Length: 394
Ligand code: PLP
Image 1 (cartoon, rainbow, N blue to C red):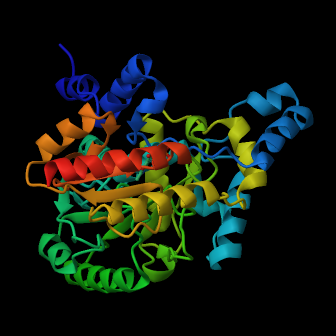
Image 2: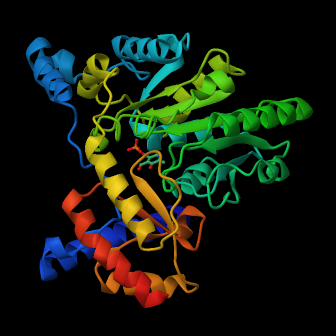
């Protein structure tokens, strides 16, 4: 006898992982240069040099026991202070270290936050297209996962659809901007209108409706796009931040949860997040990485390589007639399948070793995601393949 749900989650590999594995097999047969693998969101720019310097310095500066020992479960004070300082310098947030919980990346942070928010009968809403892992995290927390339909073609937020789905049992709405998979950034106008709606409904229900801001891509924006600081617009916000993408550290598992003091029941919520993390086996985030973040929290990535890829792909795809959402952030493009039969399109793409992730898993069939964390050369060589594919299905 086993836990069936856990078994099913382990047994059903994600489409993205399957594609990635397939790409590796094909590379062994036809050569890596002939496989256009746009499947996986693994950063392709190196961590800033200051990160490696901070690791070397930590090895010199601390004795082994201090460096490798357990930290407090909520994280080192020095690190939480550095994160609060960064939030204050950038957003005048008024953040204090007591409002910051150091976590092991956004995935674990989201899972703990959903658990903390999931009162009996709670519903948690996501906006399509959305990061597929939300569903298992929410359901594991015992809440009902509900999806607000997408706002095509701009991928902002359909407020009337949110309003229809809000319910006295709505505990939270997940917002992910810059967005995976759409690459879009929610505008200040969208967010202010959403905040007004949530405030009105929360007052009507007599209880808070939280925003859970999933922000691994906060720093990855182009063309000067603004990513508004959500707690300043809507105080009942919990921010789940990660250094996986901003500092290219996905394997090191480090980020933070920010529960602003102004959020409803903020102290209790912070305590519940700590409790949910404890129940999930969290002991502390990696000690060495905490020391690195204490020195590097203020760093921003150099986005030139992503931006170059983004522009070449966006312009190239549009030139061959694909419809693409305007990609202002993250490292994804979300493209409309240019024919009626999506399955046929994906089969044909795969036959050309063009590995695209179908939109179905993101709650948005009829689209596909391109992750452009690849070499610029791959992008340039893939454009004629996209063009031939488009002609084949048109
Ligand atoms: N949220 C989104 C939207 C993501 O795309 C990812 C990873 O790709 C995560 C959360 C999880 O990131 P982390 O590595 O910080 O756990």
